[in-house]
Structure formats: C-alpha cells, structure tokens
Length: 235
Image 1 (tube, rainbow, N blue to C red):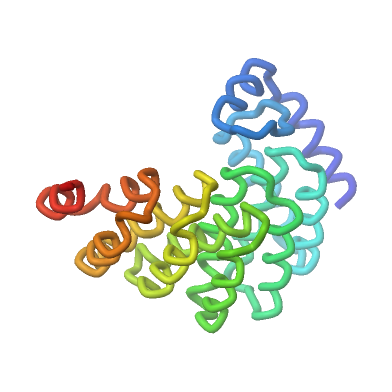
Image 2 (cartoon, rainbow, N blue to C red):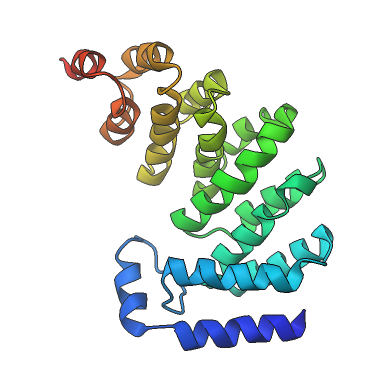
C-alpha cells in the first residue's frame, strides 16, 4: 500500500498543471491545496488504483482512504471518495461513524463534500434508513461542511423519491443559516425532491419563503412547473 501511495502521488505530480491549479481555485471561496489535475484525469487514475486494490478488504481500503484524506490535497480527497464508494455493496452499519468522522475532520471544500456525500453517504442511507435521523444532528453542527452534508447526502435518495419529509425537516433547521454553501445545499436537496414531490415541496417553500434566503429559494423552485414557479415568485 505504501508503494501504491507513492505511485499515486508521483502520478498526480506528473499530471499536475499550474494553470489548472490556479483556474480551479476560482471555483472555491476558501484556498484549496491541489496538484492541479483535472477531474477526468483523477477519475481515470482512480480506475487504475481500483484494479490494484481489487483483492484488498474494505477495511484496508478505508484505511487507505484515511491516508489520502489526511494529505489535504483536493485530488487525493476525490480519490478517497471514489474508493469508499466502490465498497458500497459491503457497507455495514458501523461504517457510519467512519463516514461522519471524515466529513467532520477531513472535508474542507464543497466539491469533496458533495462527491463524498452524494455517492457514499447517499448509498449508505438507502441501505440503512435508520441512520437518517442522525443527519438532523449534522444540520446544526458548527462545522459548515457537516451542515451542508446534512442536506446533500439526500440527493441520491431524493432522486428515487425518498426522504422528502426529512429533507424538509433539515431545510427548516437551516432556514436562517447565514452560510451560502449551506443554503445552496438544502436548496439543492429541495430541488431534487421536487421532481417526485412537487406539490409537497412547493407548499413548504410557500410557507417559508419569507425566511428562506434568495439563494436557497431559487434553487428549490428551479425544477418546478412554470405555473408553480410563477406563483412562488409572485410578491
């Protein structure tokens, strides 16, 4: 595993481009530590890594993810996200605490947050719905990424029409949140939920539109019918 880690980092250095690193920073308010590798190249590298790790246990792969997360590099975090997701058929209830720790201690930007939570945590919630209530605790956490994770972890389940009530409960907890990335997170979850529960989400938006920041509001109504969108936008 040490040799593989060395190979990965050498490859990332070789693939790194200063112009990509600088242009990537424009998408983030906070500074990110990066090699300057484009996402498609990261995904391609991950595929080759998975071939090398195909005989490894989930536990060893998660330990490898820990090392990647700890580096602080954006590209290594995306690889860690994809490696964790590759183990989704083996997820166990005890993995929840591991995922929670990674979000709390390692996530430091919206892209890593969304990549990990959409895929890995979202898949976990579909397998173990009893953990949905734990996300409500994340919804008011001091850590902005935990708060965003509380919403964006529902994106994949919401596409399947699940957890609309829980999505609205977290949105209600975060209505007055001042962080625009948290606002965009719960607005996004409401938008996805509206595809299968349009009237339910519309009613929620109408009940809370005076409190809901404009950012979250516009996200939430984006996919609604023209009629409902017009009614929501009316003063």
